[in-house]
Length: 209
Image (tube, rainbow, N blue to C red; front, side, top):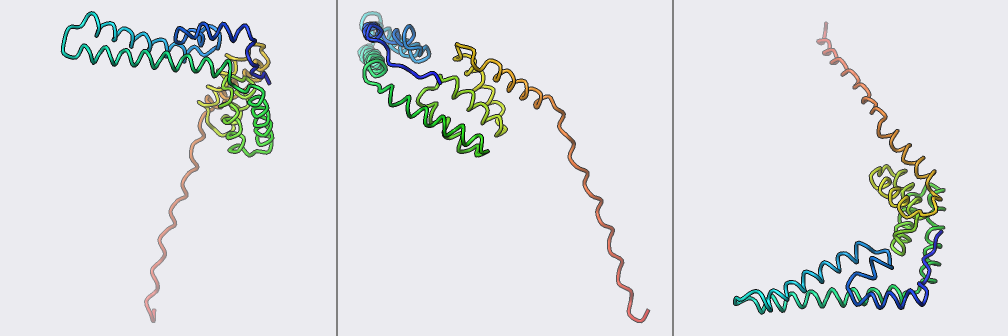
């Protein structure tokens, strides 16, 4: 399992410096493109609204626009900078890696024993610690596949392939995807024929007949 390691000192310093621009460190160094893009767009929209309210809009609500935009931009900057500090300076990577390995081992054992719900819970907890771990994504996809959740399984396998930079799971993922494709293409068997209704019972013979 590829453990998330604490960034080196130089990388932490660079991330802190880039953290002055909201989202920049997330995109360039921390492999969190979605989070970084969202923070940058919120900051940009807030700064633009503040500029409009201060310099371009001349109306009774221009001061409100300036304050709201400034608050949004400041909040995006603060959240971005604190998140960079959390990821580079304060996160206990060793403890998280040990807990992730423990949950992963439990999930594999539950999966081998056929306890799919417990395996799913263990893998989901482990993925909450590192949602990009290809080992966890593969096993989670296998669990969802056995549970009949084809869409969830395929999404997990796609994410596994995306983050599997060494190609460790390329063949197993392809095999599982082919199996799911065969199952989806297999014709659905018709329902069993309904039994013919029983004939009505003969009326009782009249007395004395």
